Amino acid sequence: MKGYAKLIIGIICIALAFGLAVDAYKTYSAEATAIKYTNEAVPIVRDAIANDNMTEYKIAEQLLKKAIEADPNYPWAWYNLANVYINQDHFHHYDKFPYHTYEQDGLAQEDKYYHEGIYAIERFMKLMPEAKALGYVRIGDANYFYYDSYPDREHKVLPYYFKAMQDIPVLEKYGGKGAVATLYANTARTYLAMGEFPKALYYYNLSVNIAPEGPAYEHYVWSYIINSEFGNANYSTAYYYCHKFIDDYGPKYGWQMDLGYMPTAVAAYELGKYDEVLKLCNKILKDFPDSDYTGEAHRYIAMVDMKKGDKEDAIKNLLANVEFSTGMTEDGGDHYPGDLPVGHYERGLAYYYLGEYTGNKSYYEKALKDFLYLSKYWNISDRSIAHENYYFLGTEMAAFTYAKLGDKNDSIKYAEKAVNELKNDKIQLVGWAKYFTPEAEHILQLAKEGKLNETPLPAFLYQIEH
Image (cartoon, rainbow, N blue to C red):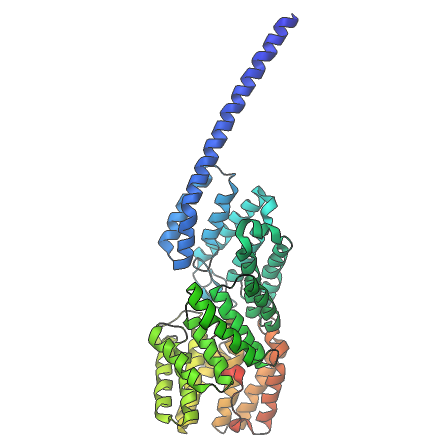
């Protein structure tokens, strides 16, 4: 009886062992298949992000879904599927108008990608809790691209980055120091979009000191320039780091050089290095004909021309700026929500300078139309675009332009409106109010004294397209 019992137990154990072996083989085979498809997808994802290539995204998505079908518990398939969805090519707050939902602007697919990306990264975090820091970074990135208000960035973006900062070794383990640098850079860009300029500069400093990277470094130097506008930094330091971009890191790492040329030209202008401004802006026009800085480059050439007494060339460049900037407005057939405020403001500035340089008030009247558009249609212009709030800037420029047209009452009205908006707007202008209220109040006082028509534009009104 005892011997028989042992035999039965032995058979059961053998059978159990055989079952475990089959399951282990299936698990191994499933995981191996998931690894295979994921490894095929990863370089395609990288290329897709680098080249904004939607075809590559689709290919990578299909591979990663095959990986998940083979093994739903393979975490890196979910992580990389999140990387497919969580990027600015699938959804971006610039694609819709501020204060609108994606559905309101006919962007249901973009909204779907956001939620699918969040779902994928949450699955990764559940399957691999020891690497949650990676997931926190991706949720922060997704929310940065999805939301566009100060409160949303404060409560739905930054907290995830700060959680990731609590586990820096995890980021270093899986992504090296570059992953840590990216976390700091993305924290900085969030603060920059919020108008929290000193905090943005602080985190950009942390980022570039770990691992300099092109777009982050461009925003780093712009942050120095923006902080210089209200006295928290100086243009000499900005100029130094600009040259680190164009003389050192840019050529060494193959960065897109117009991203460095324009801020360097801006810093050089403030330091009176006018020949360098001309050199750099002309390089942009010659070497990067499709640069987003084309309009601004024309305008800075015109500003230097007038200092050198070349009025004819100044007018020619300002008219070229008008033509370029019109292409970013409805007049040029552009209806993209992220372009309209930039196009109207830059064109308005070009017209404003044309009025100043020629004495022809009809140019001021044209400029005023652009600035009033920005001030009136807050539902188009009241958010950070290219790190500027064109609702606020357009309102201030309306005050200056009315002064040039001899309309003191409306000049005061719009200068007062700008001050009041800084005080009352808790959705978009919280950061701007902290750092630019003194300048706005000074502009209002000059308008009341009737001196605004003879006051040069302060730097924060013409240093744009950051």
